[in-house]
Image (cartoon, rainbow, N blue to C red):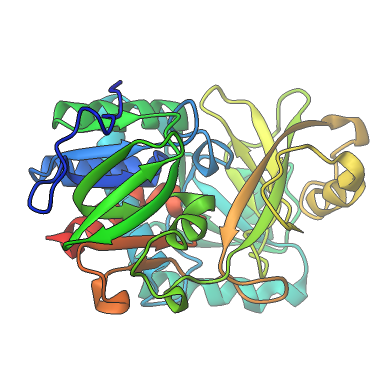
Length: 379
């Protein structure tokens, strides 16, 4: 792991840069972007405010590799998820990152949900998703006897990945390509000077670069507001939604991921597995003013009730508090989930600057495809 260069070590003038490219944020998306740029020949520094890479949004989610069946046709989420899934499976196989194609069932628990479930099939086909199969209740229960539903869609291409292993593999390829990572290096401000960027850290150090990628996740809009020369009209309003996860006491009677129909602000409380085979449920959606990772157990009864719609055998004492994740959303309560924003100079007018806003689910699945997209914008 490399040390961020201090102003005393740098030679800064109007025609000299210290590094070609800086990526702000070392979650899976920032690391995937940096890896892609480094492998294309750019000299890359990644600046991360936390003590370790992947400590934010990346490490506090379900760890699911999504197939891409939910997202509107033509959206960035649809295109980058489908492309990213193929890239991620190949990357994990090549690098030995723990992952598994578990498969998934998306279920309708009453006749009123049948039409909404059926509508996912043509949407998925339009997105290029394969490996889907419609199941009536009896066929679904043959696969998962503990399941209660009236119909389901089986997604064979859905899976899980060990996120910490993925983070380390991305860092490995970044550093093999000559890139460097500096943790505990928060960005305080960015100045646009002489067609270049001067990045000032919270410690007061400065470094000059030609290209800048803002992949700061929950802090992306905050970082963008510090960039001199970027019109504030191009910085969207960000909302924070926390999601609570519970761990199951004992083993689950399921072998696949189980999802309800997607909700307005998320994919619903679902059953997932970690790489060790432990079962967890989540996330719910609770709108908050700012990121907060404290666990609030006050809504456990409602949480359990949502699971019992498709697994009625769940007992009250089966759920143990696990962790809380926070998602950066560009739409607020009651609105449909927004799309990713990959914002380049064609939008904001600042050469060689890319802002990534609203990178929530399926950001993990899409990370390598986002890396490709950013490289194409900057090249």
